[in-house]
Every structure is written in C-alpha cells, then in structure tokens.
Length: 571
Image 1 (cartoon, one colour):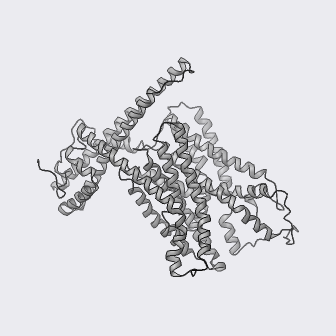
Image 2 (cartoon, helix red, strand yellow; image 1 turned 45 degrees about the horizontal axis):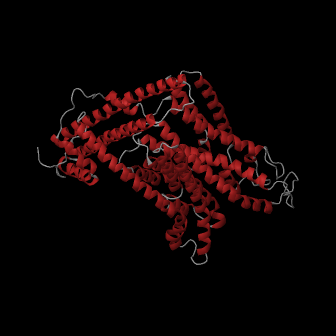
Image 3 (cartoon, helix red, strand yellow; image 1 turned 45 degrees about the vertical axis):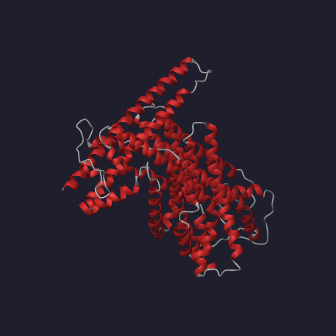
C-alpha cells in the first residue's frame, strides 16, 4: 500500500509483519532486561545512595544531641523533650486526643534508633564483600530501608489511627497521581518509580519532618529562653509551679522558627527522595520533567498524610471552635490538591532535574539551591500570607458561609502559591517542548535505522502527533473493537519506549564524549590514572552490553505487539 495513511486507517495495523528470526523475541529476554533490571546495582550508585542516607542520619543524630544538651526551662523535663507531657493534662477527652496527634510514639522513636543500628551493621558487612557481588546490592538496598524506612513508623502511626480517612483520601490522590503521570507526554517514568515517589512522600518524608521538628521545637524552646523563670501560680500534682499562660505564649513565640525548620526539613527530605529515586531506578531520561514529576508525586504523598492528620485534628476541635473535618477535606483533597506540597515538591525536583543536565558542579549546586530556596520560601510564605489575608477579609465576609467555603477560603489559601505554580507550569511546558523535539529526532532516527522494524517511516507521523494517535485509536475501536484498540495503544507506547531508549543512548554517548575530552588532573600518579581508566572502561562495557540487551528487548516487545495488532485487525 503506497497511499498516505489516514486517521481512519492507522498505520501500525496495516503492516502486521511478524518479527524476524534474528530479533530476540522470547519473553524471558524482555523480563530480564526491562523488568528484572529496574534497580541499578553498580558500585558507584550504591555508594552515592548510602552517602545520601548517611547525611540524613547524621543530621538526625545532631538533632538528638542538640535536644539532649539543651537548657531545661520547665520543671522535671526529661532528657528528650519528645517524652515530656504537660503536668496535669487530662488522660481522656479533647486535649488528650489533640496531644496524641502530635506526640512522638515511643515505639516509633526506638524503631528509628534500631533501624540506624541495623543499617550500620549491614554497611559493615557490605564493606567486606566484593564490589561486584550481587549480595552487596541486596544488602545495600536493605541498609537503605533500615536507615530511612524506619522513619515511616511515624506516618504509619497516624494513618493506622484513621483508616476511614485514609480510604476517603485515596480516590482523589490516585486521580491526581494519574494526572501527574500523564503530564510527561514522552519518556514516561516506570510506574513503580512514580508509586515509590508517592510512598516516599506519604511515609518517609512526612515521618522525617515529624521526627526532626518535634525534637527541634524542644531545642528551640530551650536555647531561646535559657534562664527564663517559668514558675508561677499553677501547681501540678507533684507540687511544681507552672504558669500555663506563659508556657503557651512561649509556644506561640517559638512557632515561627519551628515552622521555618519544618519547611526546610520537608523540602530537603523531598530532595533526598528525588535524588535516591534517580540513583536507584533505571529510567529513560533525566531532565526537568523527570525531576518535576517525581517531586510532585512525593509532595502529593506528603499531602496525603498531612490531609489525614488535618482532617482528624479539626474534627477533634469541632466541639471547641466549630471547625469541621469536612472543610479540611474540601481544601486539601479538592480545591488545593495540586497546590502547597505538590507545587513545592515539584520546584525541588525541577531544580534537581535541571542540575542533572549540566556537567559543571557550580551550576548544579546553584540550580539545586535555587529550587530548595524557592520551595522553602514558598512553604513559609504560604503559611504566613494565607493567615494574613484571612485576617484582612474576616470582618467583611461571613465565616462558614457558602461563598466563604467554596470561593473565598480556597482563594486565600491558593493566592500565595500562584507564582510558584506558574513557575512549575512554565518549567513543565519548556521541558515537554524539549522532549517533543528529542522524540521527533529519536523516532525518525529509529525509523531510518530500520533495526528490528519496531518503527517504520510510515508510522512516524502517528507517533509524533498526539491527535493522530488518538484518532487512530478511535478508528481502530470503531472498526475492530476495544481489544484491537487496546493492543494498538500498547504497541504505540512500546514504540515510544524504544524511541526513549534511543534518546537515552544518544545522550549518554554525548556525555561520555564530552567527559572524555576533559583533561586528566596532572597531579595524579600514572598507576592511579591507569586503574581509573580500566575501571571506567569495564563499567562502560558492562553498561553498553546492558543497554544493547534492553534495546533488543524493547524492540522485540514492540514487534510482538505489532503482530498482536495485526492479528486482531485481520480477524
């Protein structure tokens, strides 16, 4: 057939040529190359991932040390403020429920310390193993899980207390995650990678923020008010004098510094998650869109857990101030679902994605720092400005009315976030344009190469035009049924994955060429240079072999799907 393909006659089904015998078509080949090798296992990656985890644990231990050595400003303070309880607080009722939401579970605290000990022990074992031993890879990821995964205990404690609220937040969060996934257009991240980013935000990032900030609040209290006499007229059961009015005022005066600390820790934890995911997972492309999507997914996960605790909190306080958990659900899981933590996480990830595209260390540091500063500043400004705007309109608008609930309150909460959301959308637009241009080049190059027949020249227009792809699916559905349309969609995605693989290889080759052109440091000894070159060559050969196997597997999968489409259309 020599006619130009039309929308009603999609190109992929028109050429149901079976794969050639020279192409690897066995299912195990694809499983090993694309499924079994989802995680990286080289020594450099493992070392970098462990370094990031060690930094996090080092900062946490520093927080513990500062809290333990703080000045004591209240009677009978324990060694760690997270174990302190207001004297005379009732064991039951609203105040107890309120306190339990913000208290650090002792089980979770000791679990984190146990995880640190286990992680250190596993690293001691890894050091004694050969670098290429597969067991070293498994133990590395186990050490990371022990060091960082234990922080998820803080989040799980909150989520386990409100299972119905968790279920209520699942549909909206899942829909938002699907939209974030669809925003990529080309070079899609593996679904496990995206789900891991969401889980990182919901469990580990939120747990890190809780663990660090609860310690920081007590530390800030002690150092800011060292030497202050807090004794007063109120007496607890042990005869200690405590002025509760001054104590609560003290909490309000330190909350600003604590909020800044929390915002900083949250965004740093988001950055750690994005970096670890990029290091651990094998994926097609690392650019601004990759970082932005991962950061947004992590922020969405954080918002998930934060929504649960906020809804529970306002439900508890409804008997005191008339607030409702339903309003919090509307704000956090509907009106501003893509704001707040999602936007700020996306900014952090975008900075890391941009940094990954440059080879200069100074530019990398600058881009990552800019993303972090913007996210931290936005998080703090959002809290203060939204409260300030709320105070301005409080005397002019009825609180709790329909207009306030549906329009004014969401607008007040979102107004400080608009500039940051605009920046994210502009970065996403720029990144997608760059991806489309790269996709056009990669698809054309794959079609011209004619390797394996995964993409033909007649199929290039369909792959490069989303409208043509969509109408090809619609036409196939109308003419041949839903099974053929689903098969065609899988075939198109497989073809784009092949193009993404080619793009990745071309970028890697260009980076290797640029890196090889750099001069070696003159201060190095000849033996060190030779050893480094041999190690680099060995790694390059291994990576090239793995890349070839992955490309062959992707092409074989595309050919199998081509056959499936042809069979369904022909029948």
